[in-house]
Figure 1 (cartoon, rainbow, N blue to C red):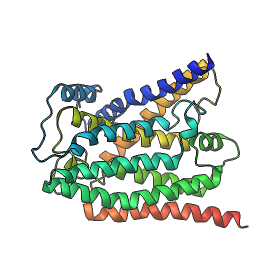
Figure 2: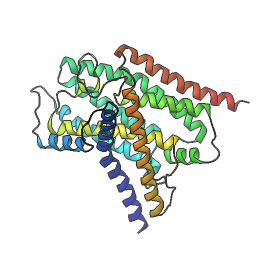
Figure 3: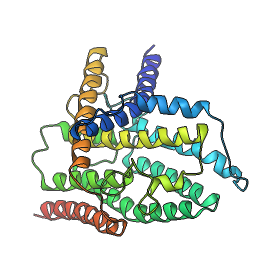
Figure 4: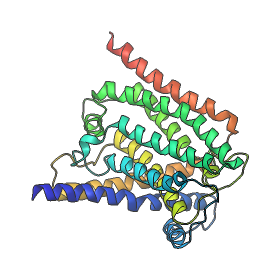
Length: 318
């Protein structure tokens, strides 16, 4: 009976992140529209877009390989698994032992690799531009993420997310400069990884600036629906990662009852709303940077992560 309950809670988390990912995207769009004094699309518009795409036929280029057809499913599977591993409303779930931060980075790296391959597969100029820019961003974003992981792992003594969340929620952790630097670096990486302003504008298709959209221009129908849903899951993943590590309050501990789990779900929804609102406010108050400035932006995130790690070593040496 206990095994069935554990499986049910784990399945509930997987379905929760899948159901909330489009809603978070719709919420960010709605808040941005309200900040710009516009009506904006309804909150459920991303769900409507996904359903419309699923109903359409798939149109493939004559020179598309079998890999081009398979890649949307691989990207969706890797991103959904990575998003499901991040503790949302409770720690110590059945599969929490697999929720290693380095494993999540590896899953996202695999999804990015396949997406870049998809952009190159058909041989269009836009696809090649988008893939080259995506790899350029990845070459700086992944080292920055690893430095953030090292900073948090040195403090918590583990790279396992449930252990990190429990440690950071304890009274042992006070104000820390290293934690602040890691938080800023993680936010910068999240903005770049999700192609948000100022790195990229998700609402436009300008060939001179787009990164993510350039790689998926040749997709349609259910393939495009899976890629769009994967992008929404990725945004939810990074917001969940930030709130799990830096605002772990309200997360139900291991072995908690139904009441604590429901309280954790409510706290998680509030944190998502706050994170989406802050993202919308940030995007409406800043202009998009030139694509050649992106390495400087991510280089700053890498330096912040490195500085946070070095400060821990210096503090531990005294």
